[in-house]
Image (cartoon, rainbow, N blue to C red):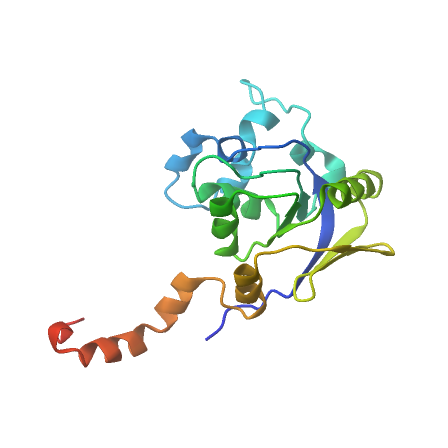
Length: 202
């Protein structure tokens, strides 16, 4: 049974400027000891958002004008560094539903896709244009049309880039392979029971 088909995402934007923002900045390593991902949202960019005494620093994720925003706009090579899946988990649980950037680290983009969190690209010029729009219009929505590869805001339409296999898995509702395997457990067991060397499979 397919999962939710993700053909488009609409929401307000939040701007995070800077190239090569790595996964250790997104979620500091000491928070990876959490048994579940339930609290990951509160730790997103923690060391950049709070000082040693827990006081808030100036950061987009602390800015009231971005409260409730769900589309993150970034620059180049976002999510580089380690392969920790906690990074996209923390962003998703903070409230991010899609990320637009100039480019992404491949493993990070893959981890995002397994959560149904689209990572889409645009040219440097278009990302700068989008950042400028959000900076001045943080109350307005952005629409990602993943199916038709378009980014829309106000009367402007930009070209949306996305890995084709990821795009297909999102729009067809096939993005979480683990869940799909679990749903197909009985069919898998039937198949394996017909194999003589696995006839004791439980």
